[in-house]
Amino acid sequence: MLKPGKEEIQFVFPAHWYAVEWSDKLKKKPVKKRIAGKGMVLFRGENETAHAISPCCPHRGAALSLRLCSDGGVRCAYHGWLFQEDGICTDIPAHPDRPVPDFALVTCYPVLERAELI
Ligand code: FES
Image (cartoon, rainbow, N blue to C red; front, side):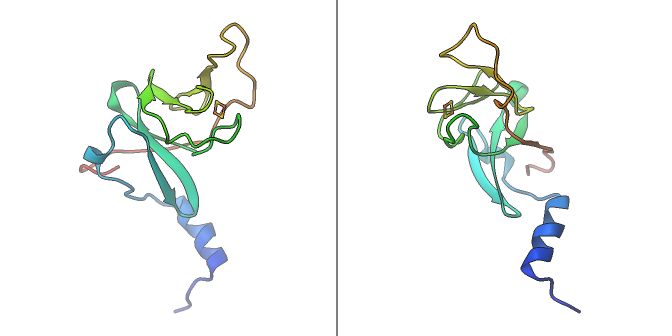
């Protein structure tokens, strides 16, 4: 049997499901993970549902895992932009009356919680 090279591993693995965290370990603090070469942040949104989004804020690149979850999403620790489970920014505290710019979104990933695993 042939061993896959590094390129094949990166191509194959993202298309699978992974157990990435125990359910009881994900609380109010977002959890930073690296899965199949991609960074992501796990958090609990509305109704305590688990979600995963990319780990860097599109504004200035701050880590989205630095602050507690709030308002149903993850609020960036730097300027306070709020990202919801679908990756869309819904609040920019410095400009509450301006529309949210198109680039203010992060990638979101499908998440299931089964058998006490995320
Ligand atoms: S770096 Fe995240 S809101 Fe500015």
